[in-house]
Length: 187
Image (cartoon, rainbow, N blue to C red; front, side, top):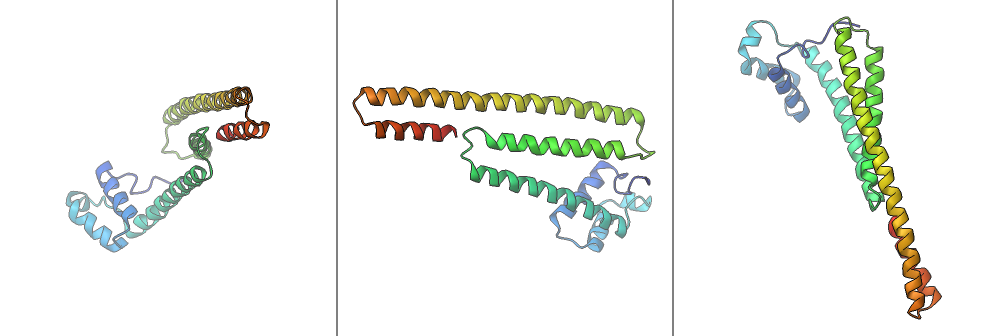
C-alpha cells in the first residue's frame, strides 16, 4: 500500500473543515482550495495543503462513505415503515447494519498492509473492535430475549382474553377475532 493521503496527514481542524465543505457540496474543488488557503495561511505557506487531485480523491472516498450511511438510513426507515416496531425491529436492523460494517472494517484492516500502520496500533484497533462486537452481540441477544418475551406475553394474553370472552357469554367468533387481534400485535 502507498503512503497516507495528504488530507489524512493534515491537522484535524483543517481536515475537518475540508470534509465539512465537501459534504455540503457548495464549492467547486478550485473554490474549496482557495477557501482553505485563505482560512489556513500558515498551512499554505508551509506547503502542507492538499492538491486539487488529492481533494478530488478524498471527495470520492467521502461520498462513498456518505452513500453507505444514506443507504443504511434508508434501509432503517423502510424497516420502520414496514413494521410497527412491536418487537423493536429497528434496533435489530441497526445492530445488523453495525455488525456488517464492523465485519467489513475488520477485513479491510486485516488486508491493509500499510507500512505506516504500526502493528501495535493494528492490535489496539482490533481489540477495540472485538469489544464493540461483544457489546453488539450482547445487545442482539437481549433484543431477541425481549422479542420472545413479547410474543409469549401476547400468547398468554390471547388465551386469557379468549377465556374471559367465552365466560362472559360472547360468541366463539368474537373470542377468535379478539385472540387474532392480540396475536397480531406481537406478530
